[in-house]
Image 1 (spheres, rainbow, N blue to C red):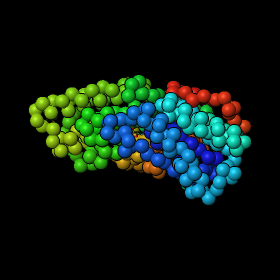
Image 2: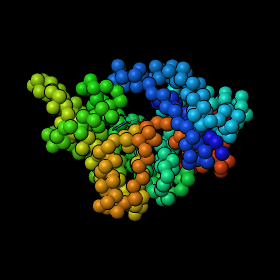
Image 3: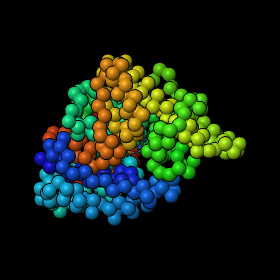
Image 4: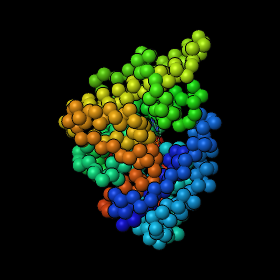
Amino acid sequence: MLILGIDTSCDDTSAAVVKDGTVILSNVVSSQAEIHKRYGGIVPELASRRHTENIIPVVEEALRGAGTTFKGIDAIAVCFGPGLIGSLLIGCCFVKSLAYALNRPVVTVNHLEGHIYSAFLSDISPQFPFLSLVVSGGHTSLFCIEGHGIYKELGKTRDDAAGEAYDKFSKMLGLGYPGGPIIDKLAREGNKDAFKLPKPLLPDCLDFSFSGLKTYVKNTVNKLKAGNELTDTTVRDLAASFQTVIVEVLVTKLLWAVKDTGVCRVSLSGGVAANDELRNRLLEVQRTDGLEVFLPPKALCTDNGAMIAAAAYQRFIKGEVAGLDFNPRAYMPLTQV
Ligand code: KG4
Ligand code: ZN
């Protein structure tokens, strides 16, 4: 069974063809980073306009890459939230028209559910139950996945997402967008002990909070600027210190969740899951704490259509098909279905 999966929730226009929910035949992502980087973050209106231009060529490329045509597609899956409403509308309206014209069923997928399902696109996928840490530009959430479509939220960020903290840190230094990969690279050459930053752990719960860290870093940057000490070296050191705190908080909370639930299988997803230090720390924990760690390939961590198709497959085989009157929503918590 071939599912065409589409995600336009943020600033990437993505389409993929996935066979039987696990085999990626094509996965095309058209990034808008070039457009948004001069603003240091996503400009929602520009993102929507670009999706409108990109969606047809991206879908056509995905079909070509999979060696199929519209006729070969059994169902169409689309992310309908959470995300930027204008961006979501483009993907959802496109999919409604396509499904109507081709007479194909539509499966709607929550973006977070899509990220969780990137764990099922590798050679080895986790058995249930497993813990899933979704850590992206819009979300930092910890779930216990008890079965297909059964999600228990254990914790989430109370303010900024981890990726958002990376992006804002990069913006305050004028380093570019998206900030994650830039800071990740700089951090490798810096001294992580150079700055003592607060570690926001929020005791006795599995929620996260990164806005205090962001403000602390902002004040530090301002002080360095005022003292004429903002150099390539101090920027690298601050990047390393900042990244160490973020990674430490994420790994600590994951280990707390393992302890609380007794579930030792953990998977990581979302754009920040492409971070090398975070991936290495989890592999370390796999060795020392006896966890089973599932890390999707980096290309499947950031937004993509394949994860949407993978999540949709499980819904489709249970007959969960949407009517063409569905609407996208900017805010859409992932709750048990
Ligand atoms: O999942 P994603 O593509 O979009 C959202 O759903 O938000 O995640 C994008 C986020 C951005 O904040 C970006 O800076 C961050 O993921 N990111 C990274 C890395 N690559 C992307 N953060 C840290 N290290 C990276 N290597
Ligand atoms: Zn995402």
